[in-house]
Each structure stands twice: as structure tokens, then as C-alpha cells.
Image 1 (cartoon, one colour):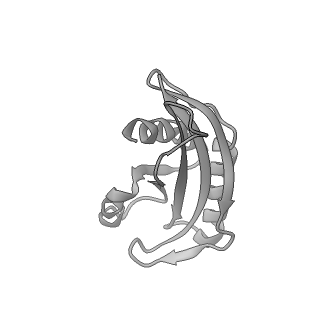
Image 2: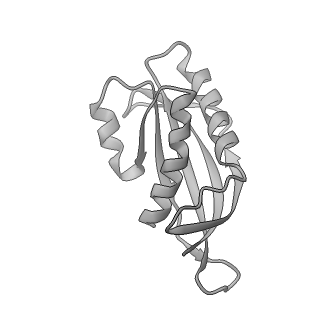
Image 3: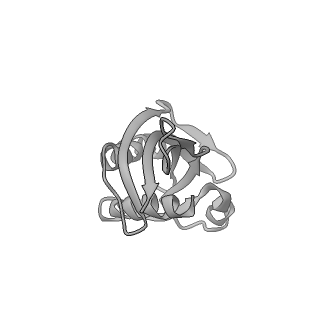
Length: 137
């Protein structure tokens, strides 16, 4: 799973060219975001269990939740929706294979249409879900 996390995070780094994305972290490190008061945009990644894909040996299907956060900017509730749309545009049907992992398909599944206030981070958040089919090389 760590390899898939790195693969997705490396692809999301492309967002730094468009937006001031300061953090891309696994959800388990959300407290790092809480302690840093300077960021404007951040992402945490959550993974559902790897499921074998159609009983094919070594091929998996994983549901990925990309949680997007915005704060310290004008209209952060609207900004987070634009941010989620950038994430969807970047990841939907993308191939971000590397030397360790082969990505066969990335399909956008859903997003939460209304941003929510995250009191832990004092930020607005929304998410997008993607289904990723992959195998180790």
C-alpha cells in the first residue's frame, strides 16, 4: 500500500504548479496539518482495502479518497470546491505508473458536492474518490 500512496502523492505534486499546495500526506498524519498554521491548501489520502481484481493473480483494485482542505484564503469554502475539481482533472484516467507499480485504470467515482467546515484543522474540506486498478511490477 505504501507504494501506491507514494505513486498517488507524486502525481498530486503537479498541483503545486497551479495552487499553493503545501502538504500531501496520508490521513494518519493529519495532526501535522493541525500544528502547521501557515498552509493554504492541503491533501490527505485515505485508502480502502485492496481487493483482488476479478480474481486475477497480482492485480488489485483500491478505492482512494483524496481529502482536500483550504484555509487562510478568501472564500475558502468555494476555493476548496475549485481545488477538488483540479484534483479530479489531474487524477481521472491518469497513468501515474512508476518503476514499482503499474496503474491499469483510474476512474473518478464521487465527490462531496458541499464543502464542510473541519473544526480540527480550522479549514474547509471536500473530497473526491477514485477507483485505482494496479499491480506490482
